[in-house]
Image (cartoon, rainbow, N blue to C red; front, side, top):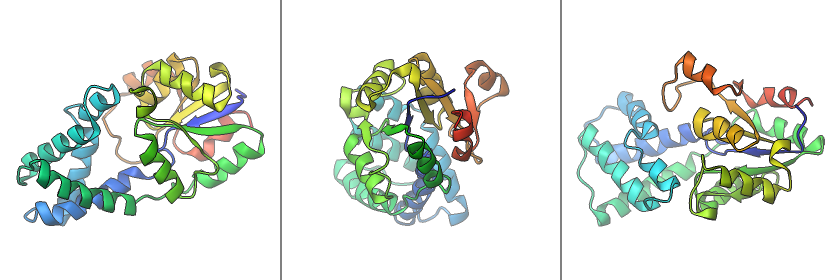
Length: 242
């Protein structure tokens, strides 16, 4: 399918956020979970990304604030792995260490630069739609040298809520300057990215990178989603008929 534009998710689509979370959680674990051996630090990443309480999802629906959801998740992580309870003051110190280490771990996936070059050379317009704040994601894209090619168009704070609401996809297409039916959305989450984009009238593309998924998925769930699936961005140009 030929399209006029491509919208990208950022975290774990363009940027290796899973790796950055691993770096950040290992840093805070050394201070707050000293009895947890380093070989168990990957468990922290699994629990953090799974967010079984759905706190980040509540934030994307505009139901809770960013600090509230992160403090709740930090305390749940500590409760599971034997860390102290964080009050507001204690969490502020924790979060400063976490965020500094998190930002220090941002890196671009190896397949991103070549794909962006191909899309732009083919005359497509490109932008980003994310369920994080515009400010944070703008800083992230700039830090990893992507902002000039992938402008940050819509975040969770643009309309006060985020994906999977179809209105955020519509707003991102409006800002990109393309019709939804002539726009692809590429993201690493099957439900809130690819399926939600398809239901909003876009071409939903799920990039299922090798490694642990945030949440387990059955073959039946993947089949029911009925979206285009790729395991790396290097496959995107062929999907788009370039």
